Amino acid sequence: MKFSYLTKMLIGLFFIFSLALTALADQGKNESGKQGKGSFDQRKGGKEYNSYFSQHGYSNLGIPEGHLPPSGECRIWHPGKPAGHQPPPGRCENLRHQVPPGAWLIHRPHDEPKHVDVSAYDMQRPGIVIDVGIFDAASGIFIRGGMAR
Image (spheres, rainbow, N blue to C red):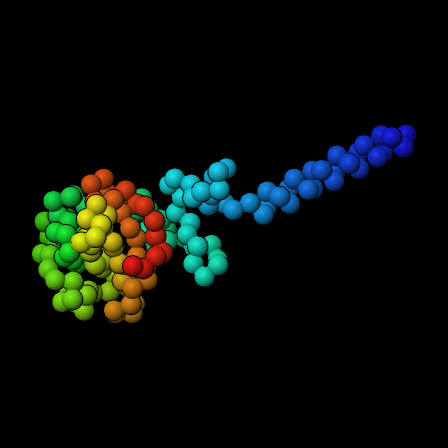
């Protein structure tokens, strides 16, 4: 009887140990230890961070490539409005101070023209950027969020 009791104890300890290891695993990484594809969780200040874009279902930007600003320029974008009803692109220095609450500022960096940086502005506090998402310019696919350039 002692053998079966000891066996049960070892199995129980193994089970508890396995659960503890699973709880310590980094949820945003795959088995190789690298950031998983399609993962929207980002690290910000040492805490798990779920970007504005993933929270609001923007896994794809949904803006036709022809409506993105040229390299080095910006464009104010109102989510939910058709592409043809958006303001024209312009100089980032000028547009950065004109973004209304709830709108986005789309920036096409000179150094990475294949990416688009999208700054989401707070609905309640004018001029406050709540998140920056990086998207692929050609496909519109969300690359990462919660990171300012």
